[in-house]
Image 1 (cartoon, rainbow, N blue to C red):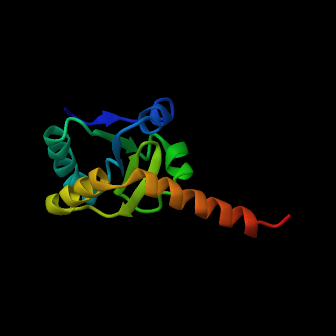
Image 2 (image 1 turned 90 degrees about the vertical axis):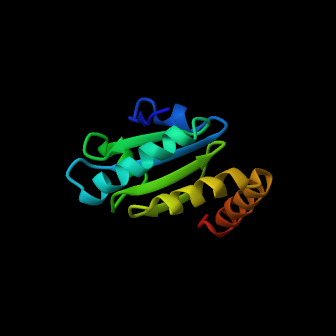
Amino acid sequence: MTTKELTHENFDNAVDGTGIVFVDFWAVWCGPCRTFAPTFEDAAKRHPDIVFGKVDTEAEQQLAARFRITSIPTLMVFRDGILVFAQPGALPAPALESRIDGARALDMDDVRRQRAELDAAERANAPA
């Protein structure tokens, strides 16, 4: 499988479902993005059960702003509709494989519990 172009029209559908989605925020003019691209493509071919999407930050400025992208490339990982990892910088292949293994190994019940606790704490500390 190859990477999928993600836009503001299809992004939410791609990441909100069940499963794992890796998203590479990139730009054509970015040297580190061009260096990371083949690594990302290779991973997409080796892991056809995972969606590997790319967001061109120049064409999709709304998405870049929504996710507060200030450095590219930035890798984000969603699992079952929840953002579970975000990191700027081009990863070498072994580090990307480690992120893939980590995403697969997540206990999503625990992730949802932790997220609910954080949301409750934020609501409790929000000004009235």
